[in-house]
Image (cartoon, rainbow, N blue to C red; front, side, top):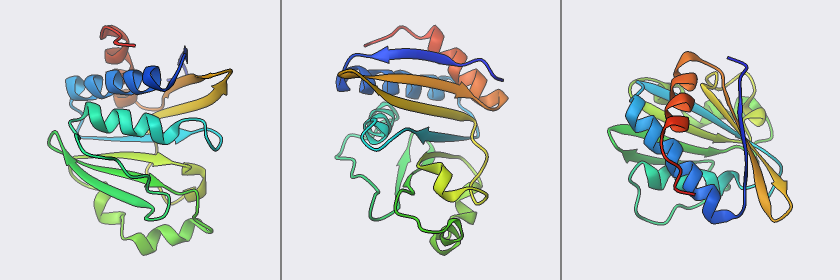
Length: 163
């Protein structure tokens, strides 16, 4: 599962396009559940990537950053989609207060920004998305961590790029 996919994204539009491509792959693979950890420094583009992925799953409205609410739920394409931003979490145990244990059942997709803040209290990722500033663009590294993550990544490679 160690093989990764790395690409430089020239701008925000390319970041969104690549996220939409990944969403199309998710819909093609149609996993029962999928956990995606979004990693990178502050300002690296994690929320932008999440917005593109949510749009690719069918969301048409504004996507607020869950920085203050910690979690924003959506019902998209037959999935319960949870967008979490754990940047402000002081202790991983605080996740229990959010009542998320029941959310990790059934058909769901979890997009988790700052997953290291919830270490030991989150589901294991199927796919890790790492973003880093690269000049005016972003370096994107996609790393599968399960057979499901591998299937999604393989499907996204087969899909034509819209970037």
